[in-house]
Length: 563
Image (cartoon, rainbow, N blue to C red; front, top):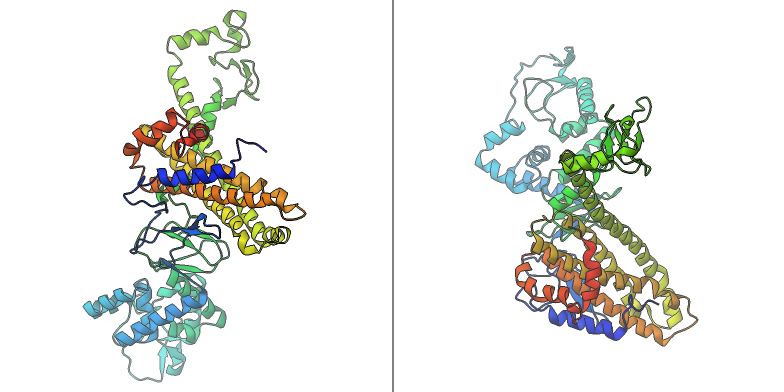
């Protein structure tokens, strides 16, 4: 077992105590270690510290239940029906008219009431709720349908509130076509081109077939979510739940009943402490073609004759373009190979190129190529670590499930302990899963840190390195050091020591990530007050205890971000 990678139980607990004592008041005036991701009006932290049976502080992700409500389909229907009934009762209008009003005002009941009582006539005209019949007819036995222009008895004609008559067959065709065209049927108007009278759900129920009525109801249900500014569908594939956000702060992390965690604001996976704009830019960059062009620019040169990009795949400078060009040239100076030979440096050098470079002939082209190469290398550095932590998190989720469903029961039998006393194992894996997520997005954050903010960059890399090295120790302990106990024949004293060590590493890692998260959410604003303190001490000495005790590890992990 590698002594450098694994800490003793006493050293872990000592580090945990040192971290908590050294970092008091590090990010705020309050002496607390609990994470301050974002608080609601009652200053309740999203991450809280709880004690397990052994009194070890554990980080627990607290989902702000008062910030959002997960809605099943039945819940959505009930809320929709309640709003329709409320508006219909207050305004003394039909349920169909109430639905039209709510649909126009994005299902905002208060806006409906405000607009209606401010200017009822204007609202009616806008949404197509006419106060009375516009078209008046005498009382003949038959009237002409406004679509097919055939005469029908009055009993075979129907009109919206405007009074324009249409036969049943034309109404059925008009409504069927509108519903098959999509959600636009929710704002259906009278078939007469000059009329703006609304066609409500009452007419749909009369003339639509069962399948079309079902489609219309689904459109109406979806509009209640999609048009509502405070409600969004869960983006997980196949999930039909919606999330109603009721918070008044910027804590947008939500967890659906399907177990998918996402940011309510941008509907991407949860990414705190990185803001939504950084995530958007990072995802766009990962999917853009710009990196392909950077690679081509950095690793190829254009053929001097046909201008196609050529990649050098051998050591020799003698290049031959592919058919049908087949032009032979020098890789360095791009001159014709017929002008080259021993006098120009041979196959592996080019005196012409070196002389021209000294004269400044190739400076601009080389500068552009070098910039492209550096940009590509920098992006690759951050992307590889972002992707690696994503894969590690996915594997940790599988391991967490295995621990909760299989291994804890097995260990309970081997160690003769109730599963409740083995909760520290699942706590450690939950901590690993969450820390992998946070660490992954810190690489996106680091990529967009501007080069001139050198002090902030150093501070960020220090905190990221501390957190990453702590996480690697925790992950190794939970993943590898547990294996002997799963294959043991009976209880052992070493398992008690393992328990203490793993719980201590969990607490230490929690503390590091709390500091990292708090700093990023404060936009590294504390870099000035901390730069001359613990950061300088740690980077210079690398031998002190507490934060400085990570000096050797920080120098190794601190290289996790590139300039």
